[in-house]
Length: 432
Image 1 (tube, rainbow, N blue to C red):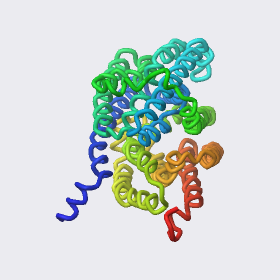
Image 2 (tube, helix red, strand yellow):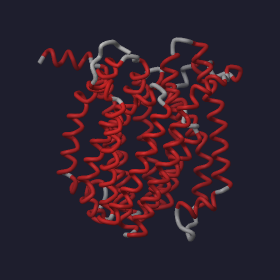
Image 3 (cartoon, rainbow, N blue to C red):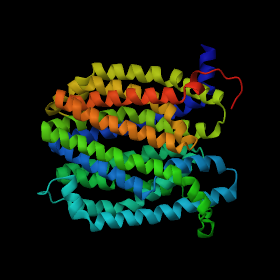
């Protein structure tokens, strides 16, 4: 037992996971309360409309930051002890990112009427929501850039404390808006919530004067932009296609089944998003910087299987518990109107378990800037998701979309094992 305790104390992954668990617990509580408010005040059809706005916002946010986030983490982690190189990287991403955010904001503001029709219905009058989103976007972009730098500097505690406090603030604002304005309030909250976190981040980082001194226009460097370019394209590729495919699948469920069924699927995706927060945040906090630092096959293999042995058993048990508690979770998080979502849990949970196995390996694409590997595998995965969804939705309704989710990540895992078979299972004669 003493050896186990000492191992836990010395294992940085477990330390990060423990602190991260607190942050994720706060996010889950906030998400549950928000979902409950949506279920009570808005219902299943409103849930589907909110889903469309969230997917569009996800794309807009990625374009507003030029998809720099993962690249910033890698290069800041790499250059954190090299002041000049670090200044060039930070200055480049700050000025180019902020300019991109202004352009995206301008487009959203001027084209708000057309976007209203595409995201909602021709009869909807939510163009002003798009305009609010446009005003908020630059603050979101600044927050993403600042958080990525903090992550790259390995200031994990500060990053997690920011997340905890920000989630509490955003939750309070969101619940108030939903309570006062129902669907309109929820849409406004989606548009501005993540942008408000910038002010929390800025306050937390205000004493790091040395960091802000690194942001200088004269250090804007096109070589740094070139280094980040592949990360940008990789991020934007997924940010454009995946939300569009998700909106297309949701609209297909509405057309072939009903808005109610689309709302059930969106509710399942939200619940999935809550428990997947733990894994996704842990991957970004620990695995991406760690993969960026290692340069041998043996170290890569050790990190991958170490993650599987440390995290996956706990995650798997959590998914089993979620499955058996699904009826209780729906009543707790949503309302009885969402009871039909019970049939969606099994395949969604299977898919999420396989997803984690695959994306742990796939993070090597980002860490080592494996551009074409990422683009080709991501494109194939998105195609499988779309066509599998159409096929299975025709057969099984909304449940078909969760079956397609499982099939897609089973396919993606097979691709990862094929591409990294030598690194993961081959003989390591030398570290190359």
